[in-house]
Structures are given as C-alpha cells and as structure tokens.
Amino acid sequence: MENSKNRTIFADDSANRTILAEKCENNTIFPKPAKIIRFLLKNSKNTTIFADNSEYRTILGENCENNTIFDEKQQ
Image 1 (cartoon, rainbow, N blue to C red):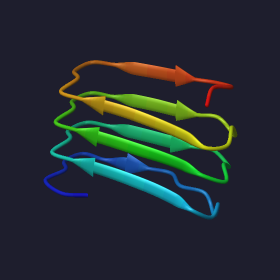
Image 2 (tube, one colour):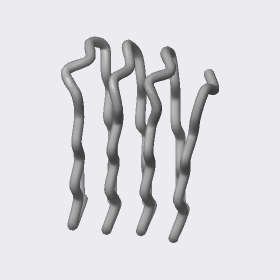
Image 3 (cartoon, rainbow, N blue to C red):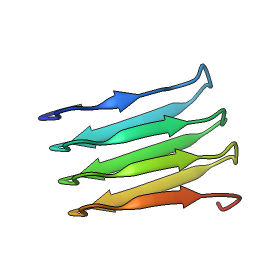
C-alpha cells in the first residue's frame, strides 16, 4: 500500500492473494476466504468492498469516491 490513509484490511489466510491499494483514503476491505482474489484500488476515496468466497476474482476501482461494492458469485 502506498500513500494510503485510514485503512482497515481484514485479510484471511488464503493463498495466491494480491491486495494492491494506492493513494486511497478511508477505505475498508473485508475479503473473505478465496483462492485467488485481487483488489486493485487506485486514487479511490471512501470505498468499502465485501468480497465473497468466489475464486479467481478481480475487483478494480480507479478514481472512485463514496463507492460501496457488494460483489458476489462473479468471476
């Protein structure tokens, strides 16, 4: 994480996980068990993401503000 503020991340012990967050503020990420899951957040503010236990998931958010994502059962 680079240039991040007020961040809370609850990561599990899954393998092959990538969480990348740059220049984010007031973000909360609650990833649940997943084999391969990637979070890429750049220049985002006030974003909350709740990931489910789907496999091979990629969540990408750039230049977003005040977003809430409840992503389930998607690849």
